[in-house]
Length: 233
Image (cartoon, rainbow, N blue to C red; front, side, top):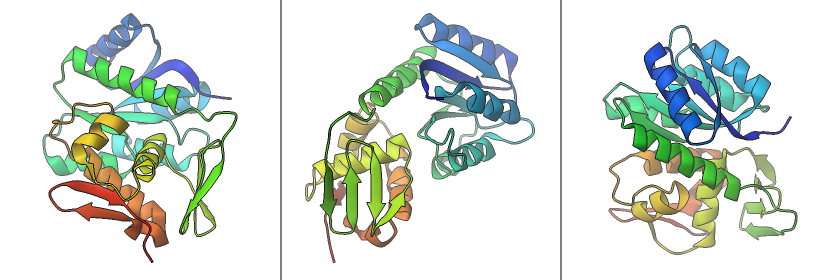
C-alpha cells in the first residue's frame, strides 16, 4: 500500500488540541485521522499510510520519542514525515526527537498559522521528492546514488534514509565542494526562513554522518559558516 499524499495523522492526547489540529488541517484541504496514544498512532500509520504525522512529544504509554523510534524501524512506515510537537522548552528535549528521526519539531504553544505552514511546506517537499521514471546512478568515492529510485549506498552497502535525510544529502551533493550555510539548508531542504533559530540542521547533519559510516568525513563542518560535502580519502 503506497502513501496517501493528502492524509495527515494527528497524534495528540489532549482532546482540545487534537480536535483543533484536525479542523485546522482539514480546512487546508487535507484528509485527517487522529490518535490519542502512541500505540494507536503507530497502528493507524501502518493501516492508512499517511504522508505526514504530527506527533506530540508527551503521550500516555509510549511517548513521542519511542513512537518515532519504532516508526523508523518499521520498513512499511519508516519514510513517514514526522513533525514533532513538544511542550518541553529545553533544547536537549527537542534534539532528542530529531536524533531518533523526527524531520522537524515545533514547540508548544504554537500559532495555528505556523504549524499549518510547516505541514504545507513538508507536503510540497515530499511531492517534489517522489522518484521519477528516468534517472541515472552517480558515484562519488564511497558514495553511490540512484537518483531515479532514491537509493543510497556507502562502500557497496545500501543505507536507508528518511526523505529529509535524502534531500539534505542530495542538496550537499548537488553543491559538492561548495559551502552551504545553515540558512541555505533551512531554506532549500526544509523551506523554512533562513534566519530561523533552530538546531534542526545540525542534528540532521549528525544523523546523516552516523548513517554514512566510512564516508562520514565527506561532510565537513565549516565553523561558524555551515557545511560542505567533499570526497576525501
